[in-house]
Length: 447
Image (cartoon, rainbow, N blue to C red; front, side):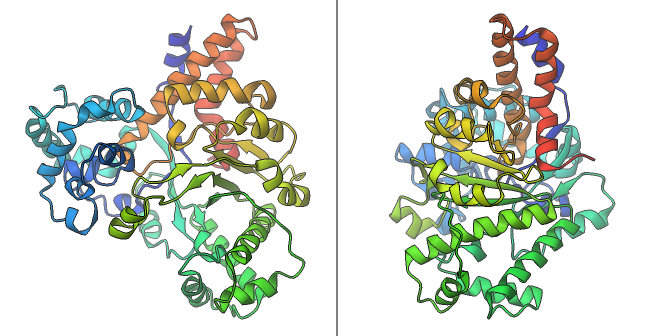
């Protein structure tokens, strides 16, 4: 039955409503540069594993020195350590990319590294392996990028003007202009003022500028916002201008910044009630925990670690202000699996605005998908979930990740039928819902 359910959904169009692909790929449709820069250098899943086994990041093409490395040598280093990925979803995804997408039949190893590198290079030079052709071949119905609130979205404009039929839309990521603890917060506010022409001396002017940016994103197809925060802490401030002014003058404390950001999450939710953007909250990751790597290589280099969360207390102020709105959609993503059954499922099973995002980051795996369904469905049901998104920077891994999810869905639903919880017709309906339809509904991506 699991096989039948899987075959019924495996070829459905891919809805990719949240990820980090570069819109420039589709604006220019230029060939991908080489196998190393395509598969190794941008993928923190890959280089964090190798770094944990003592491989210097510079040997993997990361950082200023790494960029000077011969890409063939980078790929060789990756191939020599391929055994390290046994048991990980990265190996499943990469095998899919190599065999299914790139048509490489050889097994990756130090012995075959150069041969596979050459085969991939030959493929990347062919028109059918350019970004737009792959987009169509993958059956992508819509793909959302993630873009700073200060981004001019020039690539998105170019995609629209090109006449190409692929649907690529932006996502509004305003962290840099909401987080007073960001070292560039004041510079970001200055750029926000330049972009909008608003006077940001006042809090009201600041809110108007944010509304203008949201409206600009919506004009280019945006349907969602995204907020990446360490801990959820919302609070409604009666006088937010006082904190805003302190942070603008660089006089605010870390606690001031947390309180202000907590207030602004509520403001963002209220704006979503007005303009219809789905709100995503990704929380529970302690970022850049390796200080030496941060210093030498910069942010987002594989040292982000899950931490414990308190969603109930953290979202209390936000939910009691806007949470009863059936028009609002807030998708919650967590790295703290202990909160699935204890907090998120009961919360989504009550508050009209809440939906639970799919297993994220460290838990986007066969076992993680099984644990997710086991912990959330009994309390939240299926209709309070958000379907699937791949959250990837690696474009070629998109079909691999969706295939893994669809297999997990089929296995879970077949087990439910075998236990007698519902029949085959319901399972077939839910399979399609979880593979495609829910994501479109929750993210407002219906054509």
